[in-house]
Image (cartoon, rainbow, N blue to C red; front, side):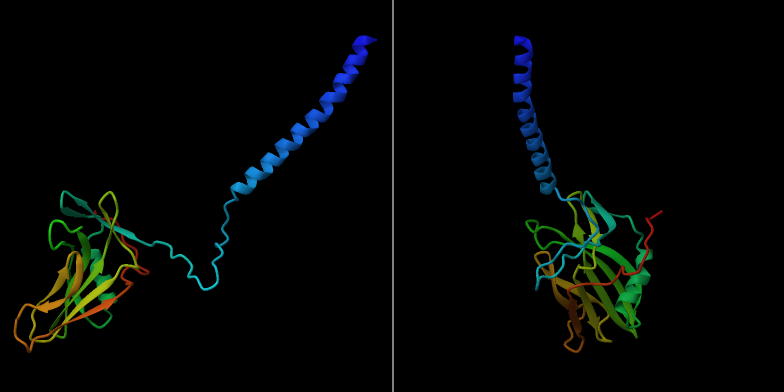
Length: 200
């Protein structure tokens, strides 16, 4: 009789305790679920007046190894994209990646450069490249674009720079009649709708 009464009393105490523990576990699981929302393909909501974040579209072009540029995409594969990017009949026959660094203390910047001619006048274009922590060089559509457009008498234009930034263009001939116009755009479309294979 005594044992039976004790068992009944114990059950009467244990049931409410188990119920409370169960409630706490359920509440804890719900809180944890709210802390980590499920991934979704739905676009993130952007506050009114704010621009949606732009997805990075950089394409790996080269790797800097001990101050030398090792091309991953061949220079030849970039000739046609440069011709399309000029869009004015300029025929591009030379592509290269150049380092810009005025003094050793400046952080080096890298530019993808295309050189060509239009109706006998020199043209060049330099596109800003992004450098990753492993020294990989990427071209993004968000990279700035610099162009040098020479007059007929100017056989070659140099990009001028300050620190690691291109600031203008200068004709190789010092004659005042020969001009070299510097044009700048904040973005570029060089690789838009272009498929590039790795260098063989």
